[in-house]
Image (cartoon, rainbow, N blue to C red; front, side):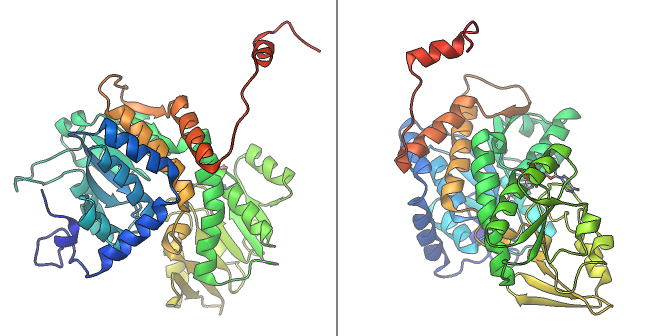
Length: 445
Ligand SMILES: NC(=O)c1ccc[n+]([C@@H]2O[C@H](COP(=O)([O-])OP(=O)(O)OC[C@H]3O[C@@H](n4cnc5c(N)ncnc54)[C@H](O)[C@@H]3O)[C@@H](O)[C@H]2O)c1
């Protein structure tokens, strides 16, 4: 398979799978990738290392990731290490078409992604990325050696449609988000998971930097771009006070909002209360909230029952990975009229009682659909950890057993150290006396 999606569209004369290239789009994307690269020192360091070591020589990586400038910088580092890459999007709405075009045109990545595709095309693209129906025109497979996923759609498709020989070939993979890790753990629990996968979103570093600080900034960015609302003085309801929700809640409060938390976990709820937030059940928060942001990783958090009592003008946004946290179908059913795109990525739903609710990004992940996703510095760390992990999985020396594995602690610490060096921060090291003290249980006060 040689052509990229940019020249193989169902709407193109070139074939059934891709899209017509748009003049100038690749150049635009390339400029944005270059801009992001300057803010991604870890991946720059890894690109040099991989160019020398070539850890991915002869290996094919199937990736299902948000197609953004930061993802492109990540994939360029893998390409420098010798990888052949097939890329599908991990969300039908989050693809940045200029980046997809640049990767296809300039970086030799086979890209199967276009913003705004329907569900069928979305899964067709994933199937192509994992090598279904490739070269021989008779349903043959060119399966991957390594996989990268963000949300679990690639892993679940691979395990659903690929023949056993294709699964056997996979050395391992990385999953980049909490929701995907939960799906993988369910696959491992029922004995389905056929190869080792490392939970890249589960390291101390990524949870702090990506889930908390990245989301804290970019979800608010998406909310503001799509709604244009002034947060100061508003009542903002954040559903879920985990790594993401706690960051979003702190950012909203810093901009002057009154923040109400909903939780199902007593420990997380206690943390929220001790940090000064009000904690209420969603049924009680629904009538008083003016802006609702879901970040639970669960489903049906905001349902018809809650939509029925929200104030006129309430704004709904989701930060969780899948578009299942807000019951959009219920909203569609309840509405007597829908005004789409009252602003970019904002739809107004008119209800029979005269209220109007504003749904952002169709209930999909708001920071990626209505804004640019995480800033490059955040993705530098998250992707840097994935790149280091993938290089270890590529090496034939230490094969892991099928199942979900943690990122090795030395990789997490290495990545943090490289970034700290780039930022000019310096650490203390333990003295001999401190080491001895910490190792000795005889010593007390
Ligand atoms: N938007 C982004 O850029 C981004 C970044 C990272 C993760 N995510 C996604 O955000 C979601 C949350 O991730 P996280 O790392 O914060 O997970 P987490 O497990 O740390 O936190 C989720 C919290 O939601 C709570 N919760 C679960 N069901 C609930 C319900 N019905 N009502 C209220 N609270 C409920 C849990 O008790 C938990 O405290 C996941 O889907 C994850 O994939 C999004």
